[in-house]
Length: 498
Image (cartoon, rainbow, N blue to C red; front, side):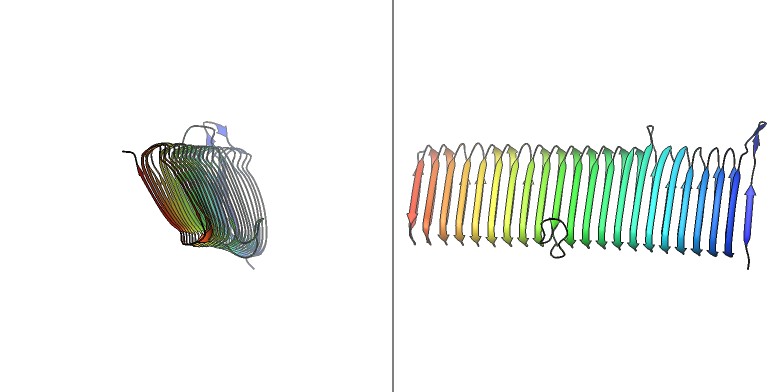
């Protein structure tokens, strides 16, 4: 049986000033345990206890009030701690086999606490500048955590990181720079992965993952960014990138194979994503596979996304300011694309069923779109440009198709199709056009083309199939009213006042 204990206790004297009060207490039981300690300068304290086979240690403390308390139980555990600046504190407890810790703390008031229970866990903490706190708790096997915090500019310098991992093979990496950022990671299960990088001032990141092989990544820089990610299930992935100031992102994903991507660049943008399977309140154990992508540029844009069922997809892109998108998709393999530019656009989108497709494009100022699709294989396109255009499109049935184009100033379009395989195309140009289309039945078609000013079109196809109506109005103040009852009717209207 071999026990090796090496102490190097150094007392330095500078200009007649004695730096003393170094204390070290150690207790070892087992085989081939090793401790190496260097303490220099006022009030350093080390408290070590090792029990087991071939546990290691290497402690260096330098300057004022450095304190270390270490407990290692098990076999082949390793520890390396280097504390250099004024009030550093480290508390490490390990219980198990082949756990590893590496702590470096440098200036002022750093504080680190690491507790590992299990086998093959690895924890590393590096803290340099002014006021840092890092907590790491790992329970299970083969978990890994790395926290690096550093103040690189003048300021308060307060950074805090909290990592809790329960299970096997989880990994967490946190990098924080500058002032007053906080990262909170909690992972339960196996194979989960989290990465957080925060730079500049007053950021908050919170990640909670429960399940298997979930992944979360957060990158924040600027001033006062907030990110929250919660994932429950298997193989979910979320990535959030925030640049600028006061942006907010919230991602919630439940069940299986969901993916969320958020990019915010500007000021006071908001994104909220909820994706889950067939349940209504969190994890259901079935469904998922959704994809949501949000891109926000400039300021005060808002995006709200809810997807339930399986394999739905949505992409939202907002540029400039005060744009709002609210999207809901329920069912299987529905897709939506919303693109908003300029100022004060509003889009509401609701799809329920299977393989419905919707696209909304808005440009200009104060355009509003309301789009509803219920059933399967419906397609809708809304394109609004310029100022104060208003569109409502509803399709209820299967295989319906509708397109609405509005350009210039203050157009109004309402399309309601009830049945199957109906088609409506609306094109409004000029100023202040009104179009109202109601089509009830199957295989009905409507086409309305309005140009000029103050034209009004009203088309009603009721209780029949295979009806056709074409309306073309050009000039000013034309008025058309078409009513079709039964099946196989056809109407053509052309008015031109030029």
